[in-house]
Length: 184
Image 1 (cartoon, one colour):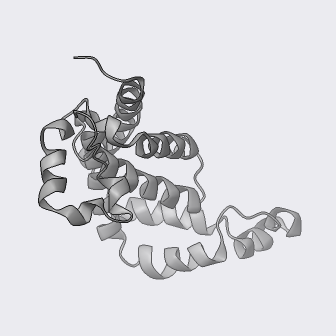
Image 2 (tube, helix red, strand yellow):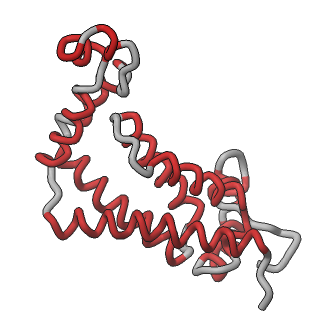
């Protein structure tokens, strides 16, 4: 079976990003990653807001905070109070995004949720590999139906979309791309 360049690039990106997510999630699962760890991470983000930088490092440092005041409000009022639930979402979310990308099972959906997690980490003040992973995941989404030709998706995605036509409308079409003009 001959695969297109897009499907091979998609496979390489899926494996790379998937491995990063899978190993990160697995490490959190086996290490007992919990609400305390999340709270520590989030408080580190709060230390990078305008007000915190102004108080600790002066006006020059506060001119360009890594965490916006709006996101700091979410951290303080939503994420920290529910940190055990956030920890559960993070560790299992990372694990299942990685598994989905590696197996090619709901690949676009996994990439989409990976982007959401990477942006959450970025908005909380952690750069790390997040921008790179976001770019790779956006490419996975842009590749479209070709990402489904190598992986588990090829066996059921066409049938799923045929059964639920709403998946071909609006933004769902990006998350469940099917090429009706060629064999997938």
